[in-house]
View 1 (cartoon, helix red, strand yellow):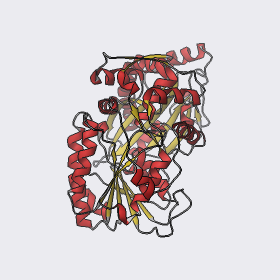
View 2 (cartoon, rainbow, N blue to C red):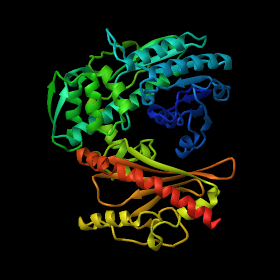
View 3 (tube, one colour):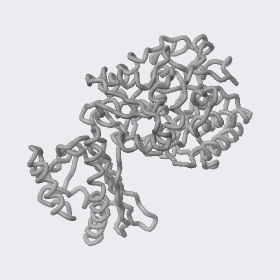
Length: 487
């Protein structure tokens, strides 16, 4: 049985999801919670894991690049799902991937882990591209250790938050016509997220899968062009007109994707290197080992949209929670970011006391003329720009409205998260983050997260980035000065 909620009768032990804050990890943890196993989630950022609200899950902080942090996370583990990839780290990501795999294989052997299940990528006949080679070589490194390894090699994963899926969604829902590289006609067997999760659990419980490599794919081979047309159709949008041209190299393609999508540039650059290949999955052995109903591409895209609409996707607001994107499929899952920070001799309590008083008659303590100008622009287009006010000038609660902001998250003296309420082509979040310093002071950071809606949303962001950077640097300093003066 492979569906969540219908446990295998022989499933026991402690399962570690290493890389639990990533896309697959953040979906695999809640999937495993339906089964009678102990689930442990590990990531570099413990606060991200805590924000998930995973009841009954052991949470640990660990980094595969820090060998000393691995012992605690691997203690008593029967099966370790290794889901670490460093695409977002920039041009050195393949070196980091191999170093991390070396460390993890050694630490797993020392801890007596029973099995490692590694999620890699499909490998074409003549592989090229750093992303493909890095994922293949990571599997080789893990197999070099003494712990048995099962490797699943998957192609494009269809689900909210999958980098390749989000690239196609940004393009298909926001560009009525696009000039694309020729790789848009390359074919692959995309797999639905729910099918991949079932495969991961299925091989983990099978002794026969130890030491094996399995291809994992869906039931169809389709081109990126065909997938984008389906993405648009199922979202109720006209299919884009796609014109492939031979002049866009992988390098130019990554810059092009960076301009017209919200996918982070480092991730886009890593993906593009492998997109020119046709991928095939020889998955007969895996289908026999883990029988399940594989979703077609159309069914997988429909399931991805349905998961968002039912709020089943495992996403913080910064990762594209659907309700914070205005319940719109054409608002980008990934966010653009801008931030500013300042150090204060005042403690977190004093800084927090100033932050929770912003807005209303108190205004914003810095460059109020700029705030007024932005409010005027919003008012002119029928927005809530001049709707100033708040429930209480000195107190703040979850759900409070501050002018055109709504409080959607707060942890006193640590975090405050506000949702942007002005009219704009996209969705915005503002976060205040306070970190205590050893000398009793505070490190305050203000970050804006912007989920653009198409090209206009991207142009809006690029136009305002300089103003954001200027504003946040000054705003953080103004807030800490007020806290110090009050202290």
